[in-house]
Length: 104
Length: 152
Image 1 (cartoon, each protein chain N blue to C red):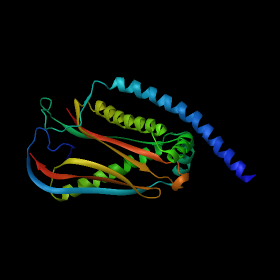
Image 2 (spheres, rainbow over the protein chains, first blue to last red; image 1 turned 30 degrees about the vertical axis):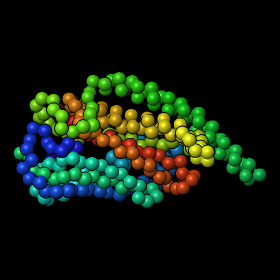
Image 3 (cartoon, one colour; image 1 turned 90 degrees about the horizontal axis):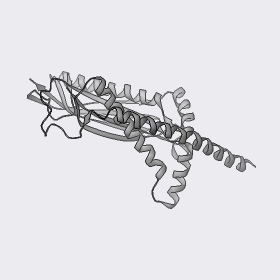
Image 4 (tube, chains in turn blue, orange; image 1 turned 90 degrees about the vertical axis):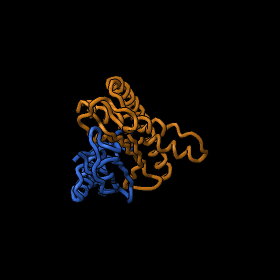
């Protein structure tokens, strides 16, 4: 599966178009990480555990998008975009979407 | 008595936040400058392939760099105070600046590791992530992601 943020796949031609595919996941932080983050909130700086958590979640979202594209018989997803939103207290939604196509 | 203690506690946290926060920020900016110099050779663009691509692209890869950075207590309180009178919130500017630069750098470093010649169609996304406590007392943090297509 070729994933790209471009409108086409360089060096290849799009032969078929399967429409929009998307994948999303909602993650909550676990309490231990939250307490550590609470301390970090006083001194500032990167929250490594959150960075990792959201990264994993984003990979999951991409995976789901890929699965959907595969079901449609595509071999590439072009023009991928990401979005994150905090939907509830302590939870974040990671969302990936793109256009499933077949390239040759 | 209890009120005075509360005020003292907030002041104490502010001082800790200021001391550690500004030290860590300075250190972060220093490392950003160094790493930006190291990754300068990789070209990054936010246009797609409307323009001519570098010759003979054989491989493409989705590259994502992300970071979550929390603000310190001093900045939080000064931003609340700033809200009363309005105007430029300088303390937040540096926070967003270093988060974006960090995210872009992580993307670039991954691209270099993969030996990309160029990163195309780069997009940046910023989101505020609320903490457990919510509302006014929540110091909060932001996530920035930078993503694009590496070509080689």
